[in-house]
Length: 374
Image 1: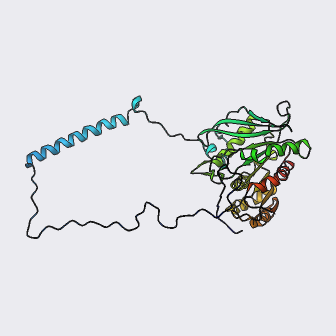
Image 2 (image 1 turned 45 degrees about the vertical axis):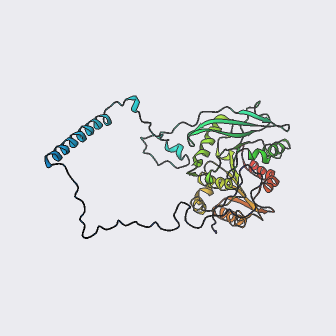
Image 3 (image 1 turned 180 degrees about the horizontal axis):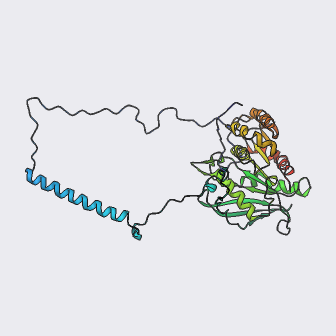
């Protein structure tokens, strides 16, 4: 599969990605680098016939006394410093804040723990405490959008994300499958609300086209960097953290057969990456206008497991997309099928924009919901 660079051009808060050319990139040195090398300034040589002035010094006995005094002061300072550093108690005024060290399972909850001898047990940190959903909007067709707030250990700050709860959720005891949704670069979780996810799910459920589902719209910040752990935040770990929180806070089908993950643009790459890396947690994956650079090795590593854990996949892009190459969707779906997954692909009219997503939203949500098991 031909590799291509990630060139996400999602516009913050806008309803269509820019269709123009890529922004200009400096090809020369950074602005702080001088355009010409700095010239070395040589000292003027002394006239050969004029000797350099002699620097006056203290008499030798006084110089020795000064050296002894300086050594004594240095020794006393070193002794006092050692006494402070190695003492068992540290004065409150000199207290040092220890950097927060997160448990390995939280910093990378998707990593496979090493096998332990029979007499040892793994120390698994507690999942996030349950959060209470706060309803923000109710829809006439049924269903509501709520907000969950929690202290994220992966992101190291309080985080909020959105959930769609199906009709009669508050009055029933039913457990529902979940579709996790990842947004694109510089877009908020609310972009899924503005795209019409609640209305689309409400219409599909009320017409009995699909069984009721929960949709979780994650908030990856301004630039979640392919939804991986990196300089902008531990967003790969954050997805696993949210999954644990949702299963503890809502009535979900807390198993692989009850989870799907999807996303648009950069979120499409993130969804595919997480599904392949966490094959034991997700049975359905979709990528809307996404790309799959660098995922071939992960797919190859999943070949044996894909025959044991079937994966339903759908990838699509726009025919006029100039941000990612939609021509790679069909070959990628073929690679998924060759590895053992059940994959389909499509290329629809349109550019790298929200319009095509709105047009095909119901079909994509229907595909995911029908593949899930209640």
